[in-house]
Amino acid sequence: GNSVTQMEGPVTLSEEAFLTINCTYTATGYPSLFWYVQYPGEGLQLLLKATKADDKGSNKGFEATYRKETTSFHLEKGSVQVSDSAVYFCALFNTNAGKSTFGDGTTLTVKP
Amino acid sequence: EAGVTQFPSHSVIEKGQTVTLRCDPISGHDNLYWYRRVMGKEIKFLLHFVKESKQDESGMPNNRFLAERTGGTYSTLKVQPAELEDSGVYFCASSRGGTAVVSYEQYFGPGTRLTVT
Image 1 (cartoon, rainbow over the protein chains, first blue to last red):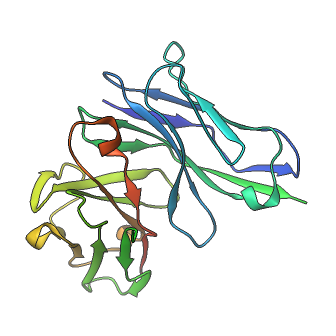
Image 2 (spheres, rainbow over the protein chains, first blue to last red):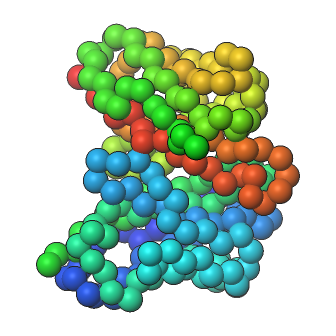
């Protein structure tokens, strides 16, 4: 079956620090990979995506590269801001399964 | 284009009561999904509608949960009777459908936070 393993949190960083949130997956076929973000009091928003191997998704300074050889999709940002404080979810969508599979979520807190 | 909307945003009910959650997908989206996040764990799939038909309901936890999508538009998820372990955030998502890569990008609603006391 499909599964997503996400770096456990919570993660606390100082402003301008480098962020990495690890994500690895298990899936049959060739899933598409996503990072979603949930800001306090808001719903899930798509942050970035990659649909095939070696694709790099990027948005708002965040990046993640679809690594088929290591089955990973790690989220990175070079310099985090207080406004990046949120819960981040790694997910895959497998057309065979027809649904998304999520990781547990990682809570990021950025302090000034 | 309006996004996915969910109602209510928050519901507090007592154990044994009934609650109905509503989801309005993006207009024209054939696919509608329900997910939930319980106890701060992962977001888990509940079920998937294609238009008015249940495509996959393998994630529904038990027969206390009933989902409908009359006319292939909005959907409701009823929990009857509610138990303490049903507390969590219930998300709805929709997507266009079809076989193109872009067709399965899911758009999520803000979620309904359900608290059962």
